[in-house]
Image (cartoon, rainbow, N blue to C red; front, side, top):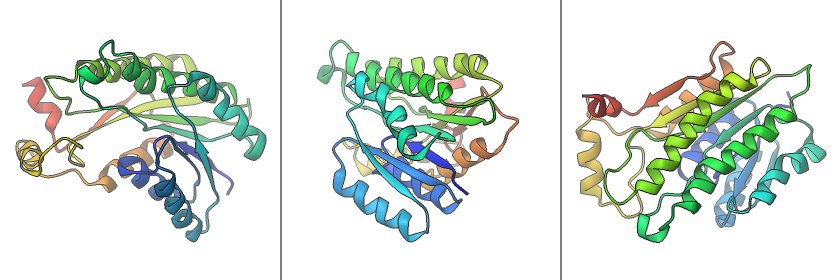
Length: 237
């Protein structure tokens, strides 16, 4: 089959696991990355070893002009995409992005623009699906710009699910504690997942399984699935 999926931020962490998981399910993969060229190239070799096709796309999501042109450039080379996974994300302290503009651009505006262009390239004979990566365990202090940007992405996921049907389905996945943050100690990370109802770290393959489920199940749109060992229940309580 000639199904192509674009995974943003695919070189590392959840993006990498997602790209590999979809390749194992017979998807050809466009690996988007910004600065992680070596990791992206290594991932490309792994996907090729599975017998799937792969393309590399290096762009900075802060440049919305490049974002807008990404999918059309891919269409010219491989034809229409069938799926889009908006995984790339900026997670910085507020002091490193005082006005929150970089978080909003990378975490909300770039996914919105990619999604709009993705929907435009779906013909009347085809259907498509988008999965946006949200967050079930947002920190309470020092990361307000990050939280606002993820809230904006959640809102536009639901809004665009209404607007883009019936040809395109749009859903979200809200992961829990999968990997320690770059500034996070192992002890703090362990305390985070041990405080969840399931008292278990979320595995990358758990996230990939949820993404694959949403991609393959043609009856689901406008859904947010928490894959977080029950962490979201603590916030509700």
